[in-house]
Structure formats: C-alpha cells, structure tokens
Image (tube, rainbow, N blue to C red; front, side, top):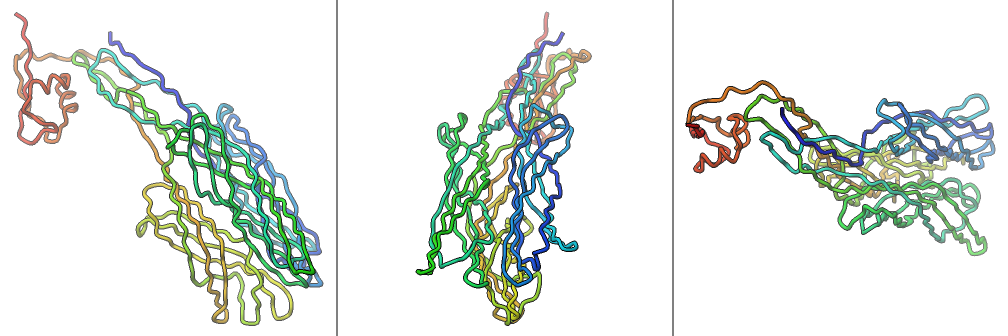
Length: 491
C-alpha cells in the first residue's frame, strides 16, 4: 500500500475581480438656460460580499455651472445616493471586497423645463480571502522537491486630512471644484505603510461682473497606516480618495485679494505583499508501480516597485464645438486624463488629456467647450502594469482661427503587477506493478537534452543512483551518449 504525507498551505490573497455598471441621474430645475460645465464625483459609503454577489452603496455629487435667462453665471449642486450589486458565483460572505468607483460618460439632456445630468457609474471590485490547499511533502516515492514562492496579501486602511491656504486675486464666488489624487511614494516600514502624494485641487470661480477664472493647487498629503505585516523593503500598493472637501474664501475687496482655505478629507486603502515559500513536491514516480499523479495549479499576485515620471505634452486639441477669434478664453476647468500601457512600439503610455474650456462669446454669453489632447509617452516598463495619470497645468491658446494649441503636464505612475504560478503534486494514486528487468546491466540511449530528473523518471531509478552510475555524463545529456544502469543480483 502506497504511503504519502501531505501538508496544508494557508495564505490570504486576491481571489478574483468583477465589475459592474449602473446609471445614476439627477434633475435640475428650469432656471438652467445654458450648461457651461458639469461634473460628477462618486464616494463609496459601504460594501459587503454575500453569496453570489457584492452589494455596494454610495453617493454621487453632481455639480453644474450654467447661465440663466439673464446670462448670469450660476452654480448648483445636488447629491444622489445609490445602491447597486455585482453578481458572480465566486462571491461569498467570507471574502473582503474592495470597490473602486469611476464616473464615466457624463451626459446632459433637457426635457421640458428641466435639465438632467446622467452618469454611468463603474465599479471595479477586488475580492480577497483565504486560499488553502493540500500538497504532497513525502511518501514511498521518488520525489522531486522544489521551493515554490507565493505572495500573501495583508490589507490595511486609514484616514487623513490635508489642508492648504493660498491667496488669489479677488473672486466673488467659487462655482466648481474638482480633486484628482496622485501618489508619489509608497513605502513600507516596520509596522507601518506610508503613503505620500498630492491632490490636484481645481477651482472655477466667478470674478467681478460675469468674468470667470480658474485656479489649481497641488496639495501634498501623507498617510501612515498601521500594518503588522509591513517590513522595510516590502512591496505594497495603495489607493487614496478624497471623501470630503471644505472650501472657505475670505475676500478683501479693497485690496482686490482673496484668501482661500481648503480642507480635504482622505481615505486610504493599502495592501502589503509578503513573499513566502513552501518546500513542495512538484513531480514523483515509483520504482515498483505505475502511479497517477494529480497536480494543482495555484496562482498568487503581488506588485513590484512603482515608477513615477512627469511629462509635458503639447499639440492640437480636438474641440466639441468650434471657436473663432471673437471668443475670449477665460478659464480651464475639470482637467483629467485617461491612459493605457501599450507595447505596439516599445512601452508607451497612450491616452488623452481633457478639460473644459470656458469661453466668452462676442454676444456676451458664455459657453463650455470640451477639449481633448491625445498623447503617447515612452516609458520603461515590462509586462502588466497598473497605470495612473494626473493632468495639471493645462493651457490653451488660439494662434490660428478655429485651432487650439494646448499644453499640459502629466504625472504618470506605473506599478508592475507580479504573478506567481506553482504546480505542486496534490494527489498520488497507485497503479499496477511494474515488470522488473532481470539483467545485471542495462544500457540506454537517452534523448538529447534530457535532464537528470526526466531521465531518472523514464528509467524508474532515483536520480542520485543514475548520476552515481554515470559519473562522466553531464546533464542535460548530449546526442549519442549512453546511460548505464547496474542492478544487484541476489545469489
């Protein structure tokens, strides 16, 4: 009877990913005559993993800048709560779900006296949980042992505040604000995950009369998250979102100045990856019997060292509506970028930088023009990487009538995704007895390129015995070599 020994490997890591989309809509009243700019930002309130689905809820804040019938520039904000779910049979209550929300395809439509803002809310959900499996460690077999590396994930999270105070020219009201987070450093120390970055705070404001002006500030932040698994040199990933913004403007009309104070509430999620290993059997055979080997495929994921770079881009911008020399460019709002990593012509980050250009026409009315500037930036990268891009410092000018020359600064982040795949032996089933040769010496002609293990398995002899009987042979074997097997004969 064949005897085997097994052990159980227990770790925690990424189980899988799923995604979902849901539409969220908000209605504004009939005072809206012309929409100049619209923005939607989503904040997650809660999420739970259940059998067959992940339920998540949150709030979408819709912001609208518009002209009324008297051509006065006004603003409006409304919040809409939502609840949605993503279904997948792998979901269960034992898993932890992390949800990343993204607003896409913001659209504006008018129905009667009302204006509706609609957004497609995308959710990318990552499931984490325990991963356990049994693997062979020994038994009445000839065994091939290897050290199999794995990643174990350790989740952590925390909150922080960031603030900034700066002086501008005099403004009458803040019409719109937007926040984009850029991470500049993720460092593991003993017991702590430190995340540093900056929030690009964009403001659209109303000056005296009906003039518009825009400002942007890079507000630095630092979040220190307790994590028992964090050690110096360990790799980690993190995500920071702005969950709340408080803006206060103190205007001094006599001096023509305004002091703006901004307070940002931040929520951070981190994951520290610990590299572990097990001594497992990756192949086996019996000298006396046929055996059926069962293998298990075990994958684990981690991350590598992030890469950060900054790039200034320029070019002709595509426009959502035409402009001419009678238009006055007043402000640029809602700077953002979308990008992917491609390998079509070396490693490049390709995408588009976008913003809303606020224009004053010859008739004294405002309108918003959406501009987009494509880019392709060469980078040093290999394999699968997570890509993040922050767009800031965008400017636009009209050198030739109807054409916009735009510039912007991109802050690009790349974090390699690493995958470990192992194939340990998980089961062995004994078969029929082998017919044993009764010759004292056997000579074999191996296949060129055979390694010691492959040859030993084919000959049904331990690798150390094959090597001892053939001390002059180097493995892998070359064409034309001979392998000798000696057998002891009983008298």
